[in-house]
Length: 158
Length: 314
Image 1: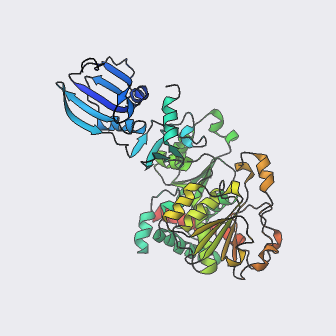
Image 2: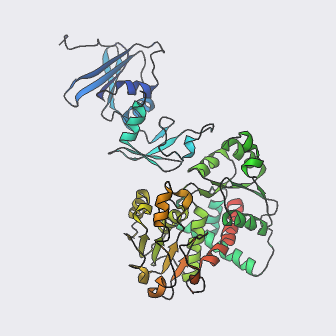
């Protein structure tokens, strides 16, 4: 068992499990974690998973992520689970849920959308039109973003 | 009922025809009837005396801008007009939001037209005063849709139960799109979407038709359905919306409405067109009883009078 354990247990913090394989770095990006915050972060990628075949895991020590933060992860890792750890024990375990509104995280795919104008004080804002398959609609121009558009945005220069 | 609806419209932004429900549209139309009567009787109105409207047209317009300005003047109000780009601060690099903020501090209502989609919604977020969308990008033109529905109501007394054909550029034309969406607020008997495949209705509009239970059918030519129609809405194939000029040349002229094509039509058929037309609607139709498009354009003034009155005063 211990030979399987690639990263040791954390005392306090958050473990994001069941991330689609290869997307852990994008998850960190969505959370706005760059490593320069000084937090201890462990990333495990492409490990075997019963549920997903292969999966990624992210462990962040010292902080408990807020619900609105983790829900954004659902945009690229719909199966992810969030485990809040206190004193080495899982005290809370939740599945991520796509938030009803996504603001500022994604760009609109329509080049003629007002949100793509430089020098305007505007943040792109989307509402969820469908969960499966994931489909977001720009609140300004009505353009639709599918799962592939969303992943492409996070992986571009990722 | 009407009073309450009027009160609800006060201070409202007018961004998409779908922002309105049937009661609210009917309230606008009732008010437009009153305005039309006042115009016909030559009465001078002072309902909006002391109010200022700003027109900010970042894209060319004839009818929309002039009819809004006329509407405001006819109600005793005044307007200010944003000068063309080269003559204004935008030439110095002023952004859109700052321009809107400035207009918002001068005027009681802002009418905006912009080539970018969502510009009116953004302006409404920036401005404290109501914003009326005079057309943005390829999407919304709510006041045009109101004029269209109002014209049908004047011509045939109702919108429900009618067989309506929409012909031409259903993909890039915001007037056609807004009109089709406006029909979903009513219960037409049947809706024919008549266009070449490359200009067919976008799927989100079709989804809306399905959601609202509108019986629609996409057809490739007018001949197939002309005899069934109560209303035919003809739109210009807009050159400026076409990504590829070669594609534009291919389709122009192939959807031309002439008195010859209309031989099979019902005598009571009402033809609408948001204008300007190029060659999709022959001049020989003008002399027929079907031609409602000039009256339709003239209704731009009473409809916009009604809307300005309701938005500013309830």
